Structures are given as C-alpha cells and as structure tokens.
Length: 426
Image (cartoon, rainbow, N blue to C red; front, side, top):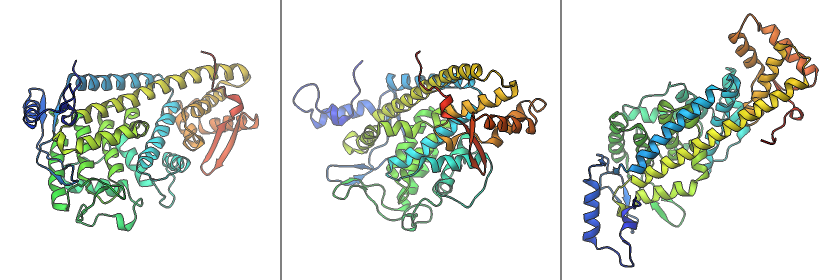
C-alpha cells in the first residue's frame, strides 16, 4: 500500500526533481474529485510562505483504507475497555474515572502552558462527588463541564450562541479580563498565532468572518451521515483553525473533542484525549501546521489519520493500565484477605473498597470518601449494610491501624501503604 502524502511532500516525487505546478494541480484534482473523497463546504484559513492567510480551498478528506481501519480499531478498543471495566468493582471504576478526569484537566492546561495542580483538581472532583459546595475555585467550572459531558448532559450545539455558552461555562474564572471576547459572541480583533519573532498562523480577522466559519462547522457537526469520528476530528481542526476567542481556544477545542467522543464511545476513551496528545505533543503541533499550510490545499487526510492514531494509542494505554490495576487488586486482596482473616465479612467488604480506591486513584485527592462508601454499600444492600454498620467497620479498621484518617471535612480514610504490594512477579 502506497503511503499517502500531503501535496507539499508529494511534489518531490520519487526522485531529486520536484514535480511541476501542472502535475501538482492534476494530483490535487484527482484527490478532491476521487470517489473516496469527502469535500466539505468549509473553507479553512491557510497560510502561505509570506505568512498571509486566505481561504480559497474547501476542506476535504480522502477516506483512505488506513483511516477506515483506524476508525474500526478505535471502536473495537472502546468495546474492549468497556468489557474490562465491566469486570471491575464499582469503586474501582469510579476511582479510575476520577483519575482520568484529573489527568484530562491537568494535561489540557499543560499543553497550553497553563500551570495547574493535580491535587487541587482532585479535591474539586472529590467535592463534587460529596455535593460539597464552597466558594467558587479555580478550575471548578471546567471540571463541572467535563462531568456534564460524561453524564450526557452537555449542550447540543445548534447555533452560534451555544458555542459561546459552552466557552463561558468551561472557562469561567480562568481568563484575565483582557483575554475575554471583545465582540458580541467572539473576538472582533485580529490575532496571530506564533512566537515573539515568527507568525505561524493568521486566523479570521473579525467576528463576522468567524461566524461564517462556525456556522458551517455547526452544520457539519450535526450531519449524522458523516462518521462521528471524522466529524469529531474535523470539528477539532476547524475550531482551532478559526480561533474564535482571544484565549482558551486550545482548551475549548480539546473539550469539544472529548465531549464528542463521550457521546459515542466509552468514558475512559473520552477522558484520555489530552493525556494522549500531551505524550505526542510535537506531532500534534506538526499536523496542525501541515493542515494550515496553503500548499496542501485544505487536505485533512493526514490530520485525521494522525489524530485517530493518537486516540487509539491513548485507548491502548487505558486498557493496559486497567488490566494491570485489576491484577494488582486481585493479588493484593488475596494477600489482605489472608492477613486479616479475623475480620468479619462486612469489615472485609469495607477493606476491599479501600483497596480499590488505593489502586485505582491517582492520589488521595481522588480517593473514596467515607460517605461514598456508606452510600455505595447502603444502596447495594441496605439490609446488610445500614449506615451505622459501615461506620462501625470503618472505625474498627482505623483502630486496627489498617486505615488512617486524612481529612475531616469531608471525612476520608485511606489504606496504609504498608499493606500494599504494588509490584510482584507475574
């Protein structure tokens, strides 16, 4: 199978002499008019060698065999992740989801050079579980918006105002006043993307041009005849290419991608996006730069291919990590069950939950709280686990120095590290 190349690389042919302009034009026409090509009515802004941008070419994708293979692999891996997760106990599942959410928020900010603290993020996630409400804190709106997307309560984007509402909700309190939109909905001033000495890209110059681009994008986003993965990746590119806001475009763009995938795939996949991008961040920047290059004439084939590979790599890391943690859970539970064979069955059940939390949470900030244990067991079997029974079991485990209290409001205990063996011979 021949490697698909963007026109900028294709022009060099197989020898030392570049192809002529006529040969490049012929190849472009073959691609854009091919049977397996999807041509959209979106004309992204592309930059030339003189750093001037224009939008003369329609965005298109050649739906290659490789793209179709990757899309199938992503859906298959999503089912595999769901199968693995189904075999995990409830607290292990929720603990790992919270850990992925913590990573997603941390790395989407890290990609933008916005410094955050994982423990701070985890604490807000934990407070949302306990329904605790303090004064608004940094990142709280971002976390709530991701949780809404996972719960399928996200806003359906049908008009331009919906994009602005999502943006406001996602980044409430995260932006300086000077970075807020200066137009009715979007920015109305010219910006450029790049460093201090080099312009990398010029997006649309004002709100009217931005609105034209996003109106066409909304139409595509709601076109169910297009594969949902293709729509998700196109949306991610076009939003970034349009750059509708003065700040926060990268975080908003990755949120849209995560939200899109949460509707069609498993939660674990949706929350592995920014982590996967962060690992391959230089490739991420490169495929955007190539897609923005006017010589490639709005060909998004390689962008779609590489984004699909990134998502799939993220999924595979999740699958592997879940299996490893499940193996650790089984191994350590066998060890603890034998070591504390004098505990009652109810006390062992509570101990097992603390073990799940220890192994499936990133850190104590995303670990299980006492009230969650009480609620979980009471809802599972309220006759066997009335609230006082669970509280008594927690107190007894603390008296035995098997667990220790780390927080009072909300009350939280953790299993002591000395009882965990995190490495073992397979």
